Amino acid sequence: MTAIIPDLPVLLAFAVATLVLAITPGPDMALQLSRAINYGRAHGMAAMFGALTGILVHTTLVALGISVLIIAAPPLFLALKIAGAIYLIWLAWQAVVHGGGLRIAAAAVKLPTLKQSFATGLGINLLNPKVVLFFVTFLPQFVEAHDPMATGKLFALGVEFVLVSLPIGLLIVYAAEWLAAAFKRSRWIERALNWGFAAVFASFATIILTAQAKQ
Image 1 (tube, helix red, strand yellow):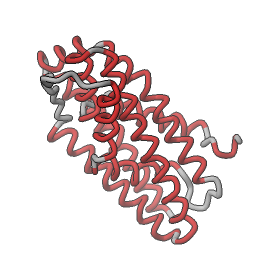
Image 2 (cartoon, rainbow, N blue to C red; image 1 turned 180 degrees about the horizontal axis):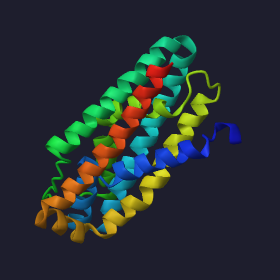
Image 3 (cartoon, rainbow, N blue to C red; image 1 turned 135 degrees about the vertical axis):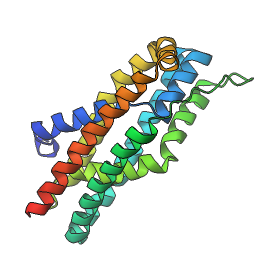
């Protein structure tokens, strides 16, 4: 069982990256805030659990697909890792230049059900091409190309992503009104989060590219 658990340095590095991503403003955070403010905390949590379920779906698809790629075409897997590093640099640049784009939607005329809030959170995650591309290029950075337990480790990282994101999501929902007011009152808070996001993922990209260059 322990063979599918990544080494502690990998777990810690991935936890830091997940934490920064979880507190960076984006569609998931905007949905959770808007549902909690407009319809109550239960709807905010339903949207949050929907988004986290979407993360598990992405993890499953990536873990199975990447494991096949590792076995069938190691050079393509290497190319994917390099492309992932370049994509992380692009994400960092986007965060600094364009920001997170937090937008809180107004309440609808008809009160949605908790299932609808859950489905909305799930849908915003599954149908977001940036999330798909992020997981396809990001998760493989934390496994070795010739690791026979790569599939299990990718699943473990996906579960870690959910476990690290869960308390952040709960905090966002419970502090929804305060967070919404803070973002509206001062742009520097959002900018600080985006700069933190950019710094972490730019550093990951640098490490990845440097490691590939030495091979």
